[in-house]
Image 1 (spheres, rainbow, N blue to C red):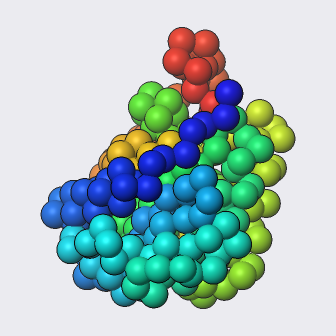
Image 2 (image 1 turned 45 degrees about the vertical axis):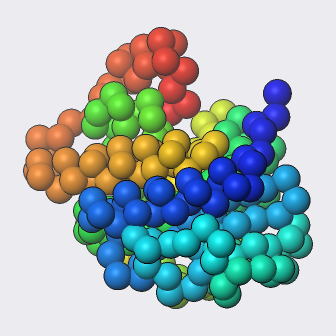
Length: 227
């Protein structure tokens, strides 16, 4: 059954609530980061250069189904990437209804260590495997580069074809994009991803042995993990 779209008034309130929560707990800073929601007939996205801690529901950018702005403050330029994620994920087992992008400290630090690696993190904890899954590490492009959007869409399609639908990608040196059914669910994915990056930085790589295939298979069978 198709994942339902969120009610617009509810989505506006949730974007602001989640943005404030992320800001107050240090997951975003200054005017970094953005949140979008796909609606039945378009999109909501946080305004360009907005602080996620002080968002106002009525000022969120409203776009139609083709990405043309129809209301609110000027939308973040990242809507181009977000729309590609929404479109590419629609045919997968995990279609996006909300996307969150941050410049998370631990995730960016891990990205600096993992430059050139295909995936950002190994499966070092069961909840990372269950709640996040694999995170493709997208080669560096300048912020807003169309090549990054192409690479993200390709990764979503490639992982889905392999039976491993994803909920997150990491833009090298910039930050993650995570998605789920709602702002609250996407925030939970982001929190687990940031915490796993922090653990990876705290424990020397030689000591942080990943879960073996037998343990991962148990997580698949018991909890439906898509790793």
